[in-house]
Image (cartoon, rainbow, N blue to C red):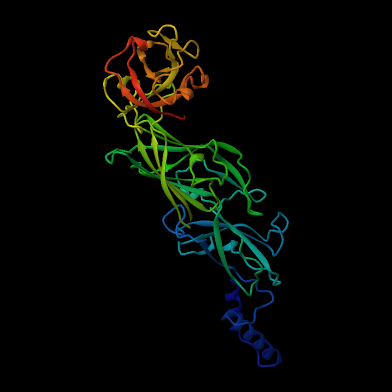
Length: 450
């Protein structure tokens, strides 16, 4: 090493003449340099001393700021110049840490030294280290989330204008991607979440990051990002490409042959995934059929991003049959099949698809579709394509203030809409309503959006 070479030179025996005196003076200068004095040999390149921290954060993908064996890649270039293939003075050199934040060259023969002529230089570094980098493009691939630290891209370009008189290279790394945390629970505290799987649809999975200017390209591929979920199913995390557009992206949870879906653009708090930011979703899974409800959230200052509480109901099967059972409340309406089992019950909610109304000419017949209805009733079923009267239920609108906006004669677009109604169940079927069970009085309604 340079220091050792000059120290040995300082201890050489010399003759007692003018040449000897000159050599003693020169040796003294070298000795001062070796022992930390202010005089540095003109042909003595000095090694860089590397320390690194992660901006404003104690943790990244793992439990500590740096793990033993973490490796970064370092480039050195003339100060003020853009990094390119002709001016790279140190090219993707591997430096490793023991977890303390101090980094050393993985191969001592590759230790980076400052230019001998004292020119100022800048440094660029990134994590995690990749050996095969072409044209300073770092390939980002987020398809495999099993080891978060291997995809947690960080970048540092804060050290500029240095030379061998200022050897300390204190790198400040910033996360260039975004992180999502999910915490899962069930409406029933005893709900077993083991085996839970969760993913986000419509997300960018690949992109290119330029080490020359620190920019991230548009997604080169789009697909599903699966969370790294804990064995007990109670939590998970994913690293994703930053985006300001969440439309078309859904959070999907699969458990016990059921799926739960949350449209990510429905959040008022988490409206984007920003670089270097962690967003948190606290999710309650409810096996009953209901839309996702945002109950609250907080924003704190990775860099900590928004947190949101969400309750998600089980998805209705694609054949659009209403399978989940209800209790007659507005939140959990009865199905048509359930409502038929409680004749004479007042003030209950029932849900179904509008499939027709009672025939205008024959009140004992159902007029499926929009033609021939009496304009003061509706017929609902658990399937939007139902044509069997025995699977239907009638809604009497005659005493309802909502007749103008509900009846199919004036509102043909209501056909096929999933709707819930509040009313009183008749004690028995009536020939005046197609021989169906029916609401003898209807007080309220709400369309159920998909």
